[in-house]
Length: 482
Image (cartoon, rainbow, N blue to C red; front, side):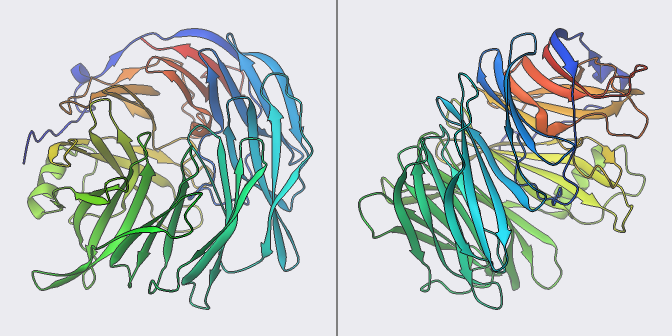
């Protein structure tokens, strides 16, 4: 295995540096989370979207339950605000931008039926178009879904038909363009695939739809590509689970991402059925243009690998005896065509008021041929009270060229702050964590709302934090990192 790096950054004072950030603008920030939503598995994780070098839009929930989309420019000067009048029975399902508009998709339920509505807001002046009905469907044991393309030119809304055991039989919906004009109705008949419990839906800028299915009792991975002209799907399928060395293995976790080159990548973590022990990480590239699947070298979660991680774990007094609570969190494609897979340990100890934790991150890199390039471990320790869940912990990431930037809220060597780490994706080497020095409050109350972090470049970012000063409220900062 090539270039094995184990990266850790908080055990010695010499490994932690501080660099003063330059504030480009700041203002008080109103934050009213919807406590009825599942904040462990959030629908919307990015509530701030850059729309230019020094411009961004924010989706903000107000005290009365309505939502506002607000646009800001350099110096955090508000340009406009558009209110979306939602009731307590309505939920925001998607928030994204196209070249000239902000799109918000909401869901509401009326008895046995549910509707998805689209709101289109002019990016230049904030004018709000009347809501448009996008999809109406019966209420089932699965929620409807929303997928949109990277540039916002395509929107796919859909709902599932599933049996009494939650197994998916088909997916129907509609595809829209950037003006929310319907392109076509969609219908994906999946009756030829057995025991589908998980489906991931993505759409490209040119309208291709990708349906990634975990089926056959969590053993098989099947991907279908549908285009706008041919009703027949292109299909690729591979058996990932099965019996290996006498042990039955199944797919425990998965993540898929359609990259800018229109190639779909997937990564899965497998586990042993009898013991629940983590078995391996597998990654694959689905090249539909050449009708080819390219498989990466399997990475085994061995006892030796766990021992090496425990060897650099200076926080836990009782070291883990097995891999647990590890989930794939991100997939990235670098400028030199490397695939970077990020996995993070996240969990709660159970109980109504139990705290939440976000700990070490495992990074795996594959070259353009899906050969293993390097892997790394980044040690961190984050804890949040039950009412905050993961609102302020975990991480925010940004890839620029061959530099992966990570921003985390941590206490390192007695300093509670946002910390910046930058990873060279060519080698896996990481910089020392640099404190942003925003004097973040450390009183066990919410001090950082990660969802509102937006990257304009690897050194230019907006964040929402609560400073350690007399004023108790959150503030929106636009800062230049050093």
